[in-house]
Length: 391
Image (cartoon, rainbow, N blue to C red; front, side, top):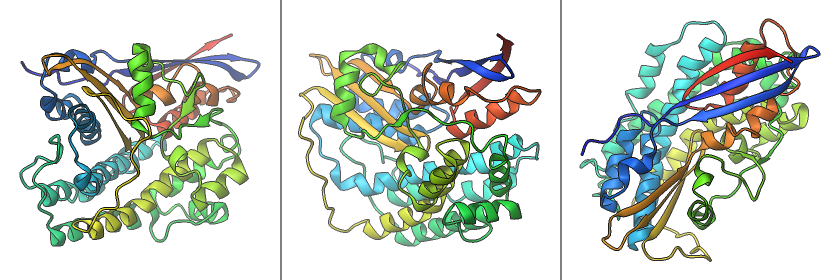
């Protein structure tokens, strides 16, 4: 049975304008192919192998969440692989950030994308999983054959760090809102020029997400909700309320992000600052992981609410936010039910951060362009169409 090759879908945004401002934003996410259709009836060990084939983006994150769900359902302990797997996830995160910086951000400014610059980063990233799991089995439930090559990992890290330093920041990352403004004004990189655009008076105070951050990471929290409500996959909520996930949620305490929020609120410039903070921290986190590979692992405390036998949930943090996979095995040991909830469903919910953040945006001939900036910073990872209607 061949797996389908696309489960991404699209996002549509319909803006209603009255009294020279956006007064309503209708946001809808369309997913053409459900993951469950591809996995029901399969053995759990197949899930982590098949899942990455279903996604053109974030395949490692999707596969790792699936592997964790399988391990929980089968009672397998893969804690010894947590650091190595996290490093492969960081490599994918660098790729996602790199695509935005080299390909998407220039487009937002009317500049030419930089595929050559992106290639300099992407050439280094495959080295990371290859230097950890040469057999290509990083996502095998229970853990693959971990054989770290410290020298190769160090070379890959150097190239990632150099790309972030030169292509994103052209020097040291800004430390606070004042340094961010000075760095943006110099305009040495696409990231700096986009930041300058977002600091303009017509944008800096707009785009407030208007909802709290999703801080839940526990598999038991997601398992309880996904198991109880099939609709949670497409309409997730934090105990009845919408929430935002992604760099802004996980970097809220970062000095740069905290300073920007204090100066400008939780809008487009705060989202950009959080993405920049994520990029700046990525090489440091990868370096710490490389040092830790092969060292005794300090295990996190066991969850207070264990998952029942035959049921498992995996939760990982992607570039775009928190991702969860949940499954239930049947009496025959095959997958009987499978559900996921992705960052796009949180950030592009009908009453979520995008829909709320667009309210009050000044109308005008460039309203679609300015709305597109908020869409891009929340990053749906799928195509997005924006239309405008009066009234």
